[in-house]
Amino acid sequence: MSNIYVEQQQDGSYQATQNRRVIAEGDTQRQAIDRARRKNPDDPVLAERVRDTNVGGRDHWRRVY
Image (cartoon, rainbow, N blue to C red; front, side):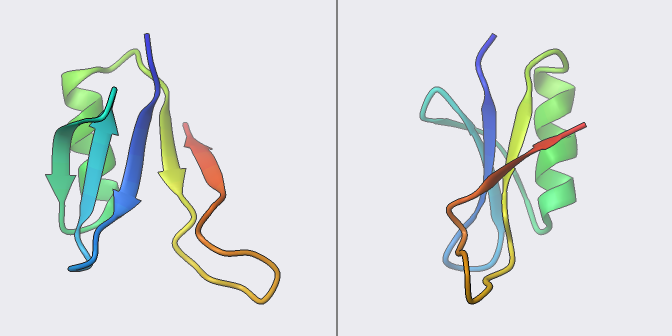
């Protein structure tokens, strides 16, 4: 069981990767998460923070429940 990471791409879409391989894509973060969960329902999903603030960038990850 390894983590699934959901990140925003340059074009604004989202990709879910696991072990450096793309396993799902979506126009929104929710779509990518849902598609990744259908493929690997028992693996934890970590989503990239999608907002930039003056104290932090997109380098933080949040677990999706």
